[in-house]
Length: 316
Image (cartoon, rainbow, N blue to C red; front, side, top):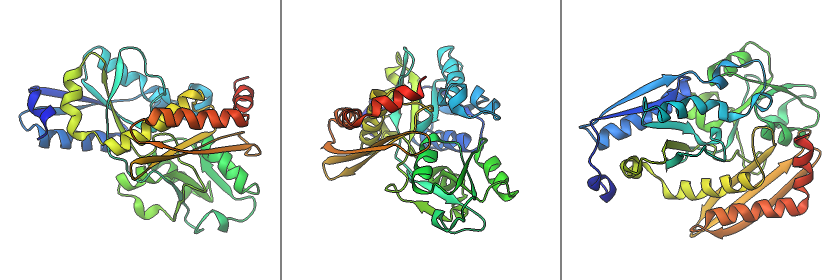
């Protein structure tokens, strides 16, 4: 056990707040099991919650307030003391946390790429003109429209199982999902092709888990230290800094992806119009010890190319 966990006496009880979707519960159970192994004297339980983002399924997220709708109820549980920590997919966590909250821990990243899922076709290039492709993400949609303008991109909401069911019912020729979610749920065999990050730049934080606490609980940050993955954290902090500088949200088609290369970070970012006709890209390399400066630099390069005009048009 590392020094942080030796210095901090483990509490008798620890409650994890989580959404009740199968993927969110897998993530919470994964963290629960890691904590139980580290602190066998602690009773670790999960408080399952239904969020507003889970309840409103007939409207795209970008039109109802963005991915923060998956987080707010969990933060209320932290605030009122009914939970100690909340486990999130980091790509669902807003770039600005409300005052009084902190990201105490960032776990090791699963596969950050997008996955092509289809029952009839091997990859995006094999889809005939007019094929209906489902995605919930403006980021994916803009990149798909830029590369494959002959495809019919349609919204797709719901949890992973619901999306797969809609595909199996024939509503879509193919759907695009996060590879990490499918692999974590034991559904990796549904992936027909993993889309390279060159062809579909991942979402900020995609594939990484974040653990949120109240900012006034340094004891929990120390307790979670053994679960913190420094390389993943550096990548995610760079990505989130870029998105924050560009006012990134569900309403903005943008992607940001950083990778560790030795003692450096390579980061790529893009901003696009939803139709994919305007696509601005930037790439920078920086120190792994200053990830947020790298993210800011990528954002500045995109703004220099005219990203501000695209963002301003989307906010009208």
